[in-house]
Length: 232
Image (cartoon, rainbow, N blue to C red):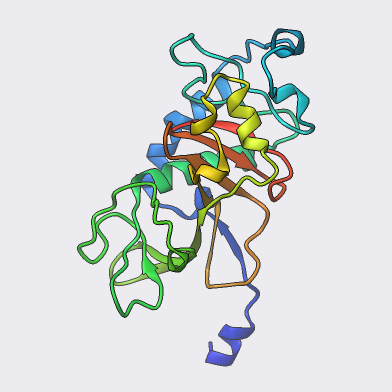
């Protein structure tokens, strides 16, 4: 294939769930099973009516069932109606991916490196860099050293939650306001999908994590609604 043909090749979207090798896939399996088997105990809107912002008062949200009083959100969320198995599995796999990986800020790298152990860089999990430069495409590889497969994915940095959708979800489950506010800089944004090379189109799927409590939320419609994915 010539270089021109390579440039003209359609940009194929590659989800982490289909592209990552055994290490990440194996890590995702227990989480995925928990995600679809955690029972939705159900909480009535009446029970939350007098508690200020409520998950049930925000259109389009999926309200997680509360756990014990000392642990108000379950370890893994349940797959909501209207979200496909592929979407939920992709978000869960992405959470496991980012949970194990870190990002490199090695000077001179065109794309910061991702993936545990690549070029001597140990993955530290859930990149949290808040600088403007950290919001970028990151490069990682799978496959063998003699025939690597190249992937690109975005770490989005701080998520402001300007519509307060995640904040209302968390406050409805007794997360303190100072730990559930985008204005406090507690949320970080990560892409779900990886690509075979850098593209301006990132799709509409994201995961957002609260760095203070480990709660992770998934959006499949570009911030229109959020669903509780679990705690990492």
